[in-house]
Length: 67
Image 1 (cartoon, rainbow, N blue to C red):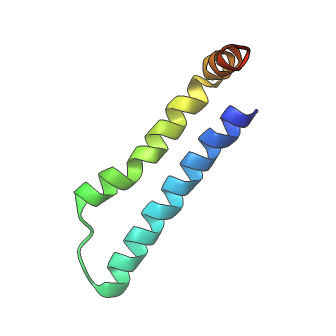
Image 2 (spheres, rainbow, N blue to C red):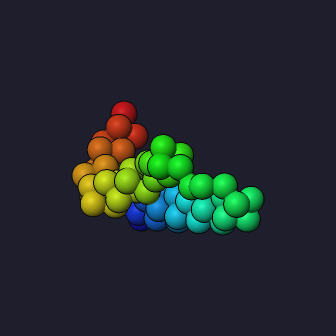
């Protein structure tokens, strides 16, 4: 459950960060650049990967904590 929460948090954080970047660029009348958009989108990609592999990651963490 914690792994899925972290994945959802990463996805939400990336979406909000990307939206705020575009909003600030439009407010300042500056063009939106692609490199900052890609960099700000990396947590979204990580969140999707963690969400897809949530069960395997949760089992791996549980295995490591049993030491």
